[in-house]
Length: 117
Image (cartoon, rainbow, N blue to C red; front, side, top):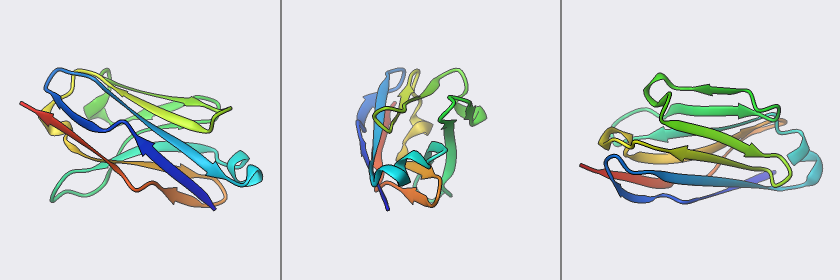
């Protein structure tokens, strides 16, 4: 089993920045087998969508809506993934969920990000 602990959500004004973090914990062999970590988000009344994902080798993939504004990074030694969000827009408001995939598929509890106009 892997536990994912998100932090860093909050309320910011449009145009501002925010960084969310997700630390994975669990058995060493299970953590070592994680190949992908990602951030998803779900806005009220909408489906959960991929925001960004990263591999242990630091290959990245972004949703078109966040390209050029968001940056995903990973600290392999700490099993932690970060999402730096810049130039935030009201439409970025959502619950942001951390996801890790390896021997299993694990989700964090989510952290609320609210952008005021």
